[in-house]
Length: 495
Image (cartoon, helix red, strand yellow):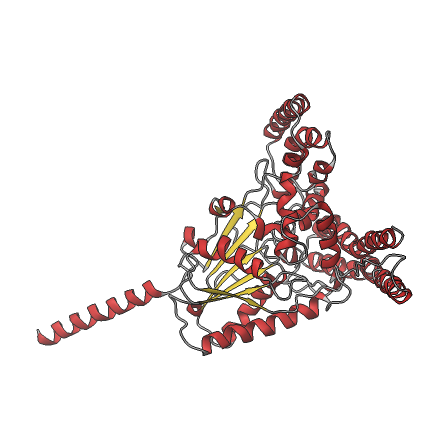
């Protein structure tokens, strides 16, 4: 009896210890604690400025229970396809990972890290991709899952919608087509470290449509590269608070370590440029928006939602066409047309101010202040200048009254950028006619080897519907920046 009592007591003690350990284990739902948060920049934002750090902390980390100290952390964050003076994206991504791993492991080695106070890592855009890729390195180095908690926004490797893993097909076919040195990669692991992933609806980098044959949906997502992907740190707090917890999240399934949040978006990127047109921009936007949104959403397999259907934790590649009830679609389009006409007529009879009209674009404008490229409350001119600064264009205030040396330096630096701007476009054209066919051939061979003759033909066609425009649009960005910047510099010179 004494031995039995000892065994019983021992088992009870062991059970209590195990329960206590389980209670302390960090999950995606756990508060972020009172430790250190490493705030990493987005592409072309190597050292986040204070306003960037404050926004990340206030909007996301504090919302998740963080009460510690957030600090700006350097990574190269280069992309020579967007700024010729920076590292190529792939090389930058490798350096990002090495620096981030070193920073995380140094924090842990310094002590004070636990499940209650893990090292919090905030990644955005390129640094979210780097965060996804370095998780396996941390695991290989023996870093416990309780010691690190990731918060990622605009994740390019978001399992169900991340642009860079949507085209990782078949698995490992990543090196054949690396448009502008941006490699396709496997999805963010869902079960290695506690992670919260926030995605803004129609952000093409993190919320790319599954059904890529829908060109309208593809183009909307690509405009979302700019209008939506830039804005995560300039959203309203209510948008973050009301984010939708998606199926496949750890908080809903009890499986894995990742929660996935979708931030609904009232704006449609493909129509947002209309808002810049005085007087008629708002009526046109409101007329077209309801039906255009339905057609865009079909690319996500839905009539009402602009994100891919199915569990958010399951890596998803591209598909051909969704299964939609055609009667429901016809009814929705009919209702949408009536809604659009009514809204447009109301706009014409009761026109609002131009300031109200462009209000949906304000987060995009404010983003240039947040990344340190424009003053607070930027004007339209500030936004253009900020965009050119972001792209590395040498804007100048030189005029004809300046010294000859200043004038020659201005002309020289402008022409130098103009010449370098042609390289990304040339690379994009080269990729479209050389490496993309190689990528297609790998898919064809893989599907043919599996006996899927039809898929061997249709899969590359479906992917190319998105990849060809993507390749050419991104390749044309720097030449466009060069043209606009050169015009501004010349106008200033002769003013």
